[in-house]
Amino acid sequence: MIGAAALALIVAIALMLIRALSGPTLYDRVLAVNSLGTKIILLLGVIGFLTGRPDFLDISILYALINFVATIAILKFFRYRSFQVSLSRRGKDGA
Amino acid sequence: MIETVFEYWNAFRPALGSALLLVGAILAVIGTIGVLRFPDFYTRLHAASVTDTSAATLAILGMALLAPSFAVVIKLAVVWLFLFLTGPTSSHALANAAHTAGLQPMIGRLGESDGGDE
Amino acid sequence: MGYFLGLIVVLTALWTGLSGEYTLTKPLIASLGAISILLSAILAYRFDILDREGSPYGRIVQLMLYWAWLLVEIFKANWVVIKACLRSTLDINPALVKVKTGCESDLARTVFANSITLTPGTVSVEVEGNKILVHALYEDSAGPGAFDEMDRRSREASDGKGKA
Image 1: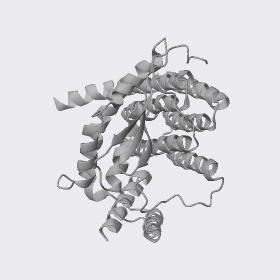
Image 2 (image 1 turned 180 degrees about the vertical axis):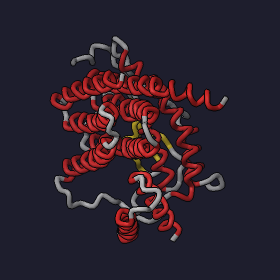
Image 3 (image 1 turned 90 degrees about the horizontal axis):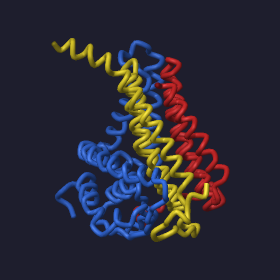
Image 4 (image 1 turned 90 degrees about the vertical axis):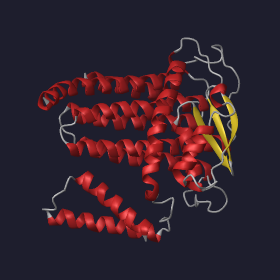
């Protein structure tokens, strides 16, 4: 049953790759890669339980951290074409 | 009395855990189908958030029921907390970036003639 | 100073939970943990992010209660989106609406906007002052008054009942 769950997650990842490769706009691709990351986090945990080594969860925590930072960094780069811009807008609004 | 309850619980726990895990994985597939079917970027964002919220919650709950020790449960809780804190932030960043770049959403009722192009 | 201590307590709990060292029998690992916790807290102080938003642990009970309420809402909203994904003919009705919020502080506004995004079917696109631009999968799920309860609860959870 855990194997079936892993298989379903792999199918979801494969389907999401179609969207990442064919997505018409840049944002579709970033969305697909971000969602792919969430599924990979779950898959890493499932692999850990499948092989009886829950240490895989450490890798999945790390993947969650990197996935978030990568999404924000890609979006920031395509908006400002540079990483050297401050994102904080203190005092302007609460965004 | 209380020991028999614990025994039943321990016999029942792996089955419940793997069932929840399977339901979560199937929800991830459903969310992906939505991402493939929906017609424009903003609607795809809604389908992707199914994976981020309920699929992740159910799968992690299932894994927590399968966990051999309490340290594993804590790690799973950290993963869950982190997914719930960062998920909306990246969704909002994506929507905000697309809106700022001038990507217009489709508005109004959409029948089958507009979508299902995949 | 309260924020600093709160951050240190939370970081210690996180480190203990992740490393599994409850007994402190290995001095090397324990001292490495103490060094990393202190370094993170000092860096947070130097980055000037040790304020009410950076460590909102004073209201952790109210925020947790709000989160429990939000989880129920999330699962209710998930059902709608799952049905929309699986219907054989595509039948959605997307809309962009402006939602007014009564949240005054930045923390309350962030909690409210993130709650909207976290609920499947609605995404907050832009925050301008006290108006939030929301994209919804179904127009009637974002009609007038649909977010009133969420607005009130997130304001009470992050600012308390007395204010606003």
